[in-house]
Image (tube, rainbow, N blue to C red):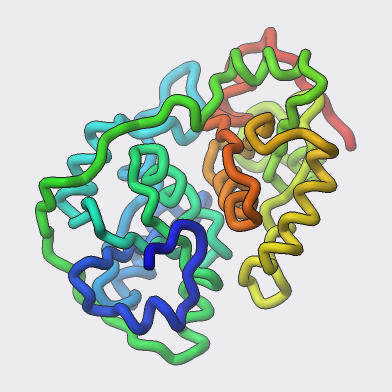
Length: 283
């Protein structure tokens, strides 16, 4: 059986040490870029390898990019092969922030053509609450030769495509940022506050139950169908501040059986690099 959206801590625990399973620790904090690596060193799920959002899951920032541009596909694939990702390998990703960071790696692997990747539901906090095994040693490189590098262009939208979608009544642009950032009341990371006109605010936390795990598929489906108001999943574009937490909403839609929505990787931090693009504030 392969897992393509979510996986429970119980299921992962039964596969620890399985050579066909590859686990990645994606803990990261925007205000403390080294905090995740330090947390990994202090303790992590046995066999997990640390990946850094800035160094591994994004490319260098340019004058017209967002804060986390998509990584070069070949460069990322080389790393994935070295780390053991390959055909018939189940990948599991996790973090300590409700999946908000790890969802980026989940999306990147699917973009490159590796569908067997799942987010650990509840993440590292749930794993530790259940007193499951913790390790401090890092795994050695594996050097797989069969990692896919088939980036699928249809899975993401450019700024121009987002701008064009604003003129189409049947497109839904969902913004995963907190409501205060969406409204422009508060902006801790980017030089311009607000949102893309017409975007619908849907903070990624809305996907979660009170214990930090994802809502059941039927509940997620009900929520998103209400948001979409008849639009098909492929008519949905997701954004956030820099194309990271937006992946959480994509994962939620996939888990709900609403497949085919797209990511705007540049998101708000790219949108505002061009002063001719419109900006809205308020609710």
